[in-house]
Length: 352
Image 1 (tube, rainbow, N blue to C red):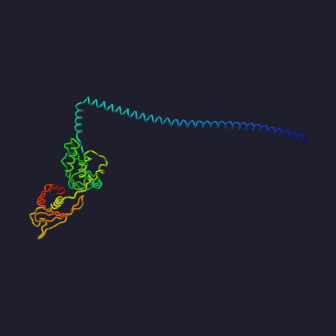
Image 2 (cartoon, rainbow, N blue to C red):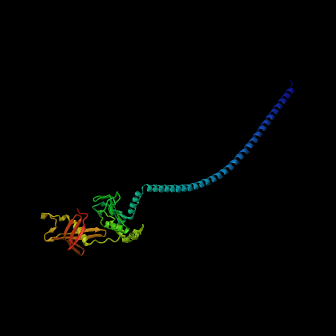
Image 3 (cartoon, one colour):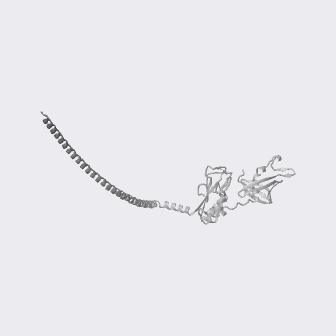
């Protein structure tokens, strides 16, 4: 084979290879074009999907708004329905109760008549109730503590209605009112045919209620019961403030007679009789008289009293006033003395 033939063969081989390369490139170009067309189609489809989703989202928002409005409407209708059901149930219950009353009345007319008669009898009474507290009204109703040295209550029934006055108490004389519990001493309850009679009985019962030891609201309740607005049932939460001067008057200064009674109470143990003249605490002094300075205090202040021992009497002086006490006698809790020719009787609650 000469060179010319070899060169021809080479040229033919190159041409065939070039043709093959062109064919492959044409196939690849066709495939690429198809791929681009496919991607474009997918892009359009994706765009359409996104558009559809935007439309769907907007529609969903509208549906949610409509749904919220529908829920609100349903709630309003439910509330109306509940009110209707409540009214219906109440009406049914009233009808049931009415039927029961009619049935009971039919079954036992006499019994119901007696019950109603008793109820009407009790309703005709007017009830007044006062709470006796260990407190100090003059100091803003602050609680007061201490031992109940003396406790005397008016004649009354206990926890029943067997009398026109009833007392419900949880303490007795000698008990201690402490800061750890409610300072109420008792409930004082009275009945009357009308309010005027009930108030009169309450006022009388309060005057007979005696407590020695802690401060109480008894005197305040007595003034409140007899005050004009309370008697006229002109009651509201501002009553005490409006009528403060009437309900909290200045404390009266105790009379010399009251101070003398208190002083004699202090000397009761000294008056114990004894056959031994040297054992008698009579304060006897040779050629002189024993004098003692006493001091008493109450809501009106301090009160000084001078007590002098004479042969058969006691002489008391307060300022420029003077009185002579003779013949003192104690009967239980009552102290009776002959003071400057006049007989005076006082309660000796703390004496034993």
